[in-house]
Length: 310
Image 1 (cartoon, helix red, strand yellow):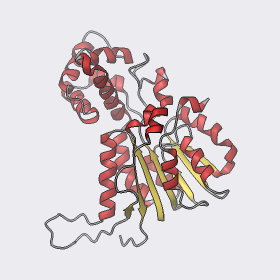
Image 2 (cartoon, one colour):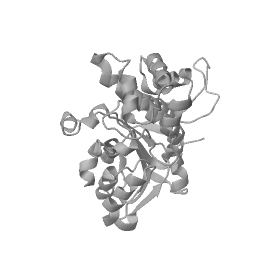
Image 3 (tube, helix red, strand yellow):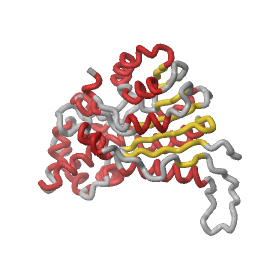
Image 4 (spheres, helix red, strand yellow):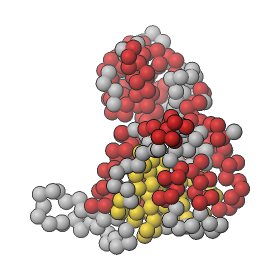
């Protein structure tokens, strides 16, 4: 059942980089339906232990059934990956995995409001801590709506989209995905209609779930949670996520945060990571053919260095 709902991306690449100690402790901040989790548990030995975190109760229910054969080796909690250090309870991790974005399970469920392809209530919350898109569209000022669409969707027609939302809500409530789809599509040229719809829905989903803010907060804690030699592996699906991950990993490898014109380092901040892959890994063509969702994936990884002085 769950195999048909969601196909995990870059499983071999992620687990081969992540699981360096067969008997280690691994934290998965984005459990989902458990595809990567199952691969991690099978790749390690009988003493490998796993902690999976997810915001989505529906995904967790599927993952619990999938990982039941592994018994107490697999622990699952509902929550946000920004709190992964707290969930790990001070136990050093030998690896942390973050598989970002949205799952096929969430997209396929019309009642969740994530996709313009299905009609349903305008929700988009990944968990109970999400913000209301419906309320945003009903109350936000045009400038704020435009900022969200531009910043989180990188949509060039953000002004037109925001203006049309404000115009339409004066006549009717934008309460369904169909209403939002018709609104955004009306200001986009036919040649780029689906692109505009994808970017607008992405922007509102990211805003509703605070995805970029939570990612920026989670990355430093994830590195702090690593044991020396432990690895962080992150799979992202759009440029906004990947940019945050890329800059963070490079900064952690560099260590020093002094301005470039300083003759010598004054901050004393030592590197915490070394990059395991210099350029982001991409899915193999065969995987993209099997799973089109994989086409935008980028995988980056770093290893905790033991000689930290900070």
